[in-house]
Length: 176
Image (cartoon, rainbow, N blue to C red; front, side, top):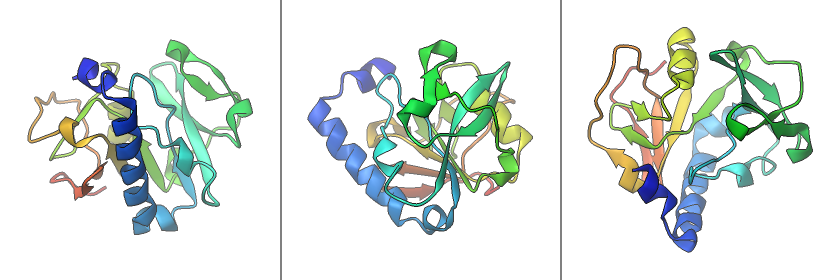
């Protein structure tokens, strides 16, 4: 699946990303959110960075701290530096408490209709969601990677919504 995602034609990927961005921008939970966590796209992930400066929101990005994620603000790319796994992370040292985040946008390779995801295997977002049941999470992927059902382990956690280029889907899992 990862190889298929990375092999997507660039023009098709950009078109689909534009549709996903439009869906997110129209969501009332995004419109009402004042603090939103994005991610730095890697390995063909949906690039949502065009949303970064479009709205007046405090934008946070995750930073790997041990086996957990912490969230820090960034005004622009100069506030980021290469961190764990070579991914750009905020250089700021003042983390937000997860309960202060209105919406966390979660990357993944594949999502299913229950909101479970296949990531890169380290479990950062699973631990984040499991440890913060009140957080609102939104997964993003392309239609091809939104599947009926994924195998699930006891430690896996599901997101509340999944957005693809064709729509916004409330997952069958519990809304947190």
